[in-house]
Image (cartoon, rainbow, N blue to C red; front, side):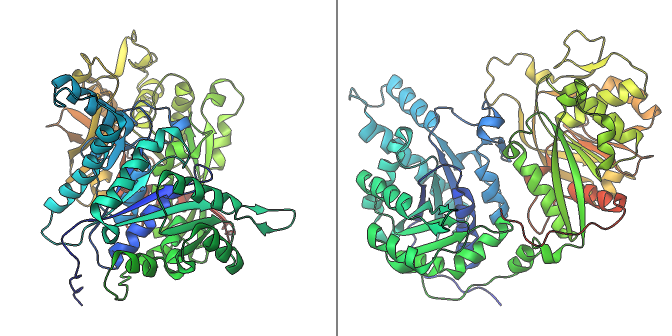
Length: 563
């Protein structure tokens, strides 16, 4: 049945999502979930993230502090929340969908230097706030250019927490947009927390009340409040929040802990968020078309799991799971697709180097994964882990830096090139099996200077890679400065490792595989960035399948897990 056209004006509608009480309460998941619901409602949706830090983009930020750098197909190094939006909406976003203070101020200063302000005294208001509004509206213009269909809705997440000084220009800008675009074309959602005092089991609404008071002091009255909590928010708590925030009771939405983030859209829907949004934005009343989304979200429930596999993730950023958030999601997508619960355990590769952990520890895992990364610390431990997985026939997947270190490991332990190395880690090595990309030799700045974004890749016939992807042509995203030195290709192939996919007319090696192994594969690209719930990236799906096949006795599955 064809979805009927929605009778909206051609004017773009904006939903602004702010956060209060504390950071990390899940604004990105709320944005992704609301975006998903509105797309199921029949609207054409896009999402954007505002980050109030001075960095121009996320590319130079430490993943332990900030979380992973998510790479868009057009080469943007963005906040990891863009990955959340892409996974929920199953659409590619661009670098334009991540706005930072650094971008705004850089643009304003460059305009001032050119004389664009004609002698004016350049100020936060109106010049900086005008630049913010211009960037937000440019996103709408970009999306509208893709289709003549009216009814575009842009969700904009305002990063940080209300009360942060660095967020003030952005909050002022969206306050102004309410005046300029009109109440029927703008909507404010505020995400807060209702903590529970464990001693008495009582929900506390004061943090939410104070957060909304701070938002109102800035000049923004929220239309909807989404309250994060351990369990469903009680009606008494909803009434108290409504009374003290001047938000209608039906617009106080409970967002309790869920086994998976992919259950959140239906939780929000059941508590009435679409009705509240529809009433305020004057959307037509109609039913939801869930399509296959419920089947996808249900696949992440414990009841759907028939197996459990344990994957050892060997890295140096293991103190924060958000450093590898897209890898974790790609593994969960692959597991859910095959009715398997994937448990990820993080292993600090430096402990292998210091003999604080025996390599035999890896024997307990059903698969070993070495993700992307940079730098010397922990690299020797990763090389040892890659070799152990090969020798012990443990399913292995290497990504980007993991691909490069798997090459070094194979050169040393199989090709007998004992001093093989990457010039990133040892610039003076006599055998640079991994070397700097030619395009990187004259780079003057660190930011946005790597080989970034989507590139077309050709897979060779008769290979495991071709069997996995089912095609000779794929497109994948990259973020690297170093590559396999093709002069070593012959000795690698002679000793049993095949390079089976190439980009840039054969100049860049993209996939390695060892045919004598149950599953030993690595990619120069980052397949995790294109994995989607219900449609796992093929190499992740094959890796998890190999892990399931390695698994011996069945392991009981936990019946409930709070996120």
